[in-house]
Length: 337
Image (cartoon, rainbow, N blue to C red; front, side, top):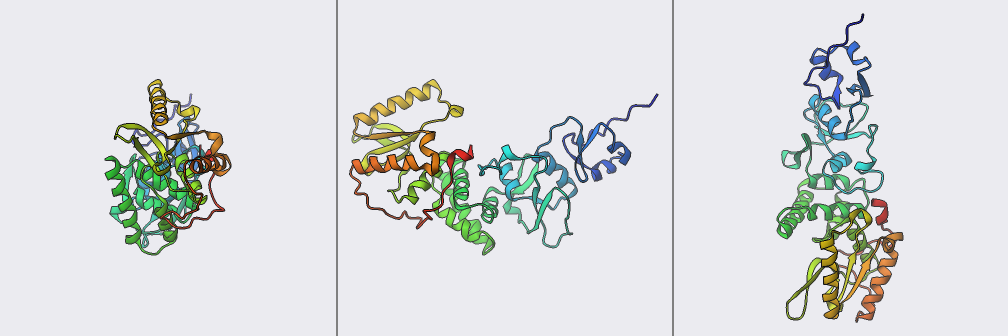
């Protein structure tokens, strides 16, 4: 009767380990070919039945490549950045290449499953996420500028500002950090695109949908709104907080949550009370639904345009402080979900 194979060393991560790690721990090549072990790429294995994520693969490969830094789209997924369709966490598969930076003077890296490029990443541009050494959020934003379009970069910039600690002070610090890394790295692929995107990033955008709607309003050259701030009455009383607001014309807009983001009963009641308060104080409020965001937010832009005109806007198109934005471009918010 054949003796059952010895268990794998506990030091091996069941979800992903390399051939080199296994051999160092005394696992034979024959053992790696047994039914208990599954190959998930050249020189990469896992215990059969285990579920493997990008983090597991990154940890395994960095154990063999200590100078390599996870970068690009892989770093963006580690940082949970909102990415366009086909590039985010939901689209990752075991075949998706892991993007890494390797030192300029390091040995050549040609390995299946890794998309490597030579770049020295200084310590201040690195961070650790879930046990993986990756480029910092700010450096990742800069790296993505060579592969993503303007809208996608602004979405990510808004996201980084939004998740900063200490509310608006933290958001302002993040804006400064993004600008600083652009200056520190100098001219490089994507630096011009990153600078342009940063000029369109705003403090206060609460979601990807809000960012893409704001960019659509900018392309239509409507007046620029204030974002996610409390609206006050003439006597200073707080009325409600809304996603977009135009104080001069007493117009506010709110993106209604989707089914996946249902309001709690308390939030629903709070929104209704806020709507009543706005109405009593002469404000026009628009509820923007997902259908309004279809076809590059066309219906939402039209509704807001009409409300602003009805409340005193002369219809004169103006450039926002960020400067001209290509009116022919624009992302589809629904595709990001």
